Image 1 (spheres, helix red, strand yellow):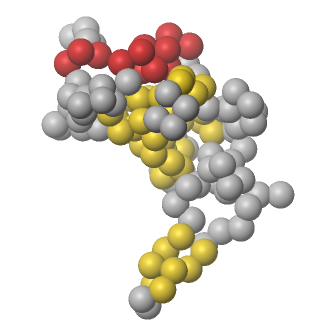
Image 2 (cartoon, one colour):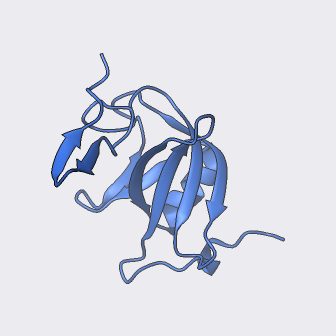
Length: 119
C-alpha cells in the first residue's frame, strides 16, 4: 500500500503533531510540528525536518546544533492526525541541552526537574 501524505489529517494551519522517540530505548524526546513538505523532506533525506511555527520556516533538527535526528521508523496513529517518529538522536534533543524535552514532572503538587543539561 503506497503512502500518500495527503491522507493525513492536518490542522487548519496545515500542521500535524510529530512525536520523536528514541528507537532503542523508547524514551520520548520531543514533540514538534510538521507539514506535508517537512514530512516529504524527512522521508527523502532520512533527517527529521520540522516546521517552525515561530519562524515560519523548515527546521532540520540539528542543522545548527549538530544534534541530528535520523529517522528509523515512522508510525501514524489510528486517527491519522499524529505522527510517531522513532529516531536515532545525536546528542540532546531539547534546546535546553537535555536529552528529552520532557524533563519536568508534577509531583506532590509541585514541579520537579528530573534531569540536568548534558555536559
